Length: 70
Image: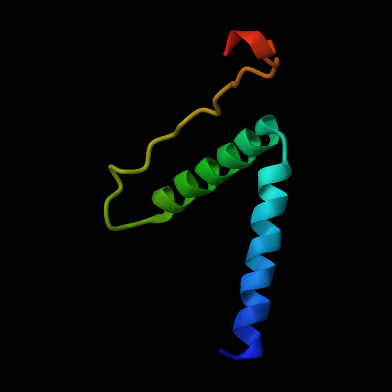
């Protein structure tokens, strides 16, 4: 295997670790941004305009649960 593939895999490992270390609320905010981008792409699509629907941003619970109530 060449050095480029090792470098790519190492970069992916570091990126995944950094995502895993982020708080859940930040991950959910990233998910909202991805959903908004997907809606924009769907709206721009001329193949099937019925797919494009306007999804409002979702509100997530931002308070942390007690450790004993899982």
